[in-house]
Image (cartoon, helix red, strand yellow):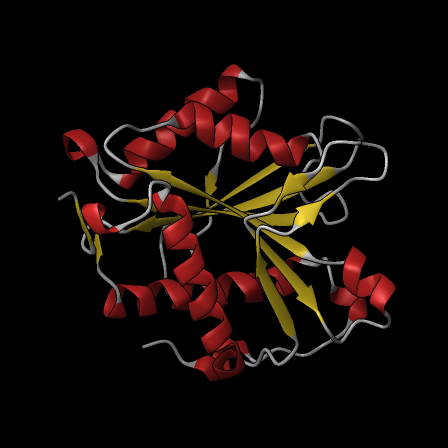
Length: 225
């Protein structure tokens, strides 16, 4: 059982986009995952056509329920709100948008937030989707254009051919290297091993973005029936 006192959250606008600040969100997400493992079971035939959304919606509900236990009293967590970058007409839908009520004004609350994109790996390992409709959306500024830290969550239903988590990361890195992007690096947190970090320049400016990847094993709570 994680100890919430380890992750007490103190509000400082100056720290909005610091690594320490975003790591507190990752800690909350990790604990949410453990609670999901203890309380949920998923059967394919009982789920919607887009199972990724079922996982995401339950995950967000659990994050909201747990946030006060982990010292968060000010989060606004939403699913699929719209996002628009000032110089781009296309509107994107964010899987998870995390805003902070304690920021100095509505202007800052609406501008300063963190984004988490969600993906699902089932029997077919869709690396192209993970890259093109996940990682690349951050690099092109469709997601998280006002923050240097963002996240991706991958719900893994099955490990085909008895693959390990490391095998999956190798496949993702092969795709990244093919695109001349640096590899995911394992940066385990105290309570969870499968956390990875990608630090790479955006495609539309010279600033790096740091994308923290949580690879979550759902195989014990998913049934392909």
